[in-house]
Image (cartoon, rainbow, N blue to C red; front, side, top):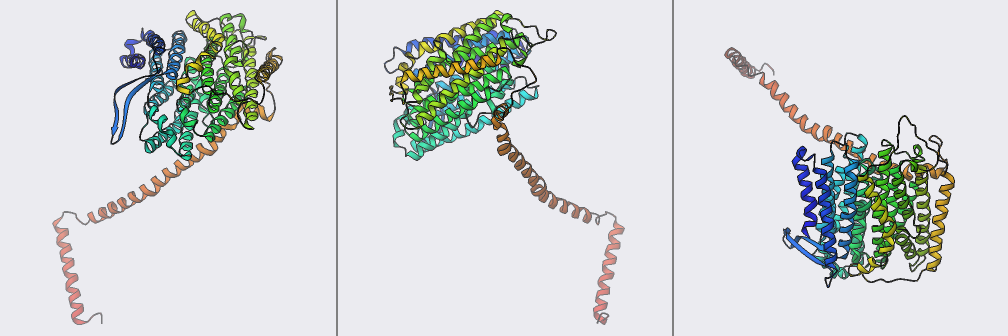
Length: 622
C-alpha cells in the first residue's frame, strides 16, 4: 500500500533533485512511476475484493504525539479510496503520456513532470490517509503542487497571478479544515475516521452543524464551489495537461471525497445536508450560466467543471443512495472531462496556442481523431444516452426530486436547468470549434492533427466517455456500500420515467438551440447583448464582489497598518532615539579634549561662584 504513494513521490524527488542531468529521460520516469502505481492499485483493488470487511489499514509510524493527542502516519485502502486510487493513477497516467508530446519543446519539461508526480503523490496521500490529519497533509501537498503547476510559466504575469490566486483562495478553505480537525479532537479525542464515525452520535446538533460547515468550507475551496469559485477558471493559465489533471481526476474531486468520507457527520444533521445541496445546486447553475458566455476554449471547460462538481455536491448533499451516485458521476466526469481538456490542448497544439473559439471553425477536416474523441466526450457530458454522462447525471437529477419536502421541486428543477445549459454551452463550443466556416487566417494558423503520443490517450479516454457511466452505475454503488451505507430511496414527486424524459428533452432543447445559433459560426467582433450575457461574461461579478468586499478593504487595511507601523510605532521609537542621539550629540560638543578649554571653563565657573557669593554678601540684588 505504501508503494502507491512512494512511487510517484520518489520519482518527483529524483526529477527535482537531479536537475538537468535528468532532462533526457525524466519525462519517461514520471510516466513510468504513475503507470506502475496504477498497476499496483489495480492489483490491490482485486485483492480487496477478497477481504471480508473490504478495508485494510497500515500504520507506518507515529506522526504526531503531544500529550493525549496521537496521530499515526496511517493508510486506509477501502472501497472508496480504491476507486479514487484507480481514477487518479489511471486517468493521471494517460495525462502524463499526453504531456510527453504536449511539453516536448518546453525547456522545463523535466521540472514539469517532477511537479506532476508530486501532485499525484499528494493526491494519493489525501485519499489513502486513515485520519483527518493525513488527509490534510495530502490536502496541503495538492495545494502546493497546484500552485507550482498553475504558475509553471511564471514569466507570464497572468500565470504567476493565477497561481497565487489559487493558493490564497484555497488557504481560506484549508483554515476551516484545520479548525474542524481541532474541534474533532476537542470533542471526541480522536481524528481517525473509524473513531469519529463511532462517536459522532455523541455530539450535539450544534457541534455537528459547526463541524460539517467547517468541512464544507474546506471542500468548497478545493473543489471550486460557491463561494470559493473564482480561482478555478484562472487555473487555465497553466499548461493544458495541468488543467486536465486538476479538473478531471484529482484536485477538484478532493472536496467531494472529503464530504463522502465524512458521510457519518453530514448524515447526522439534516440542516447540514440542506446547506450542501444548496451549495451544489447554486454552483452548478453559476458554472453553467458563465460557461455559456465564454469564448476561451479552456475557460468554457473550466466553468463546466465548476458546474459538474456542483452536481456531485448536490449528490453527496442528498445523502443515502445519492452518495454513491455522486461518486459514479465523479468517475465518469474523470474520463470525459480529461478527454475534453486534452482535446482542447490538441486543438491549441494544431492552432499555435489559439484559444478563442470564434477564431476556429471547420477543424474537423484537419483534426479527425481530435474531432471524434472530443465529440464523444461532448455527447457524454451533455448526458445523452447511452453515453456515460446520462447514466451518472440522470440518477442525481432523479434523487433531487426524491427529497421529502418542497425543496424537491427547487433542486430538481435546478438540476434539470443545469442539464439544459450544459447541453447549450458544450454544443456551442463543439460547433464553433469544429464546424461552420473556417475563421482563421492561413498566414498565421496551419491546423494539423496531434502526434500519436497525444491522440492515443484521447482515444482511450473517449472509450471511457462512452462506456464508463453505464458500466459503473450498478456495480459502484454496491461496491461502496461498506463505506457509504446501504441504498435508501425515497419516492420522487415525479415518476422516474417522467424525470428521465424531461432530462433528455431539456438536453435536446439546449443542444438544438445552440446548433441553430452557431452552426454557421459567429463573428469575432459582434457580441450578444443583454444584462445577463454581460454579467455572465464578467463571471456574474464574482471577481468584482471579491475585489470590493475582500481585496480592496484588505489592501486599504494593509496600507493603513503599514502607515501606522511606519509613521506611528516606528516614528515614536525612532523619534525618541533621534532626540536622545541629537541631545547627546550637542552635549558631546562640550567635551573638546583641549586642556585650555577645560581651564577656561573652570575659571569661568569659579568667577561665577565668587560673583554669586559677593552678590549675596553685599546684597547687590536686594
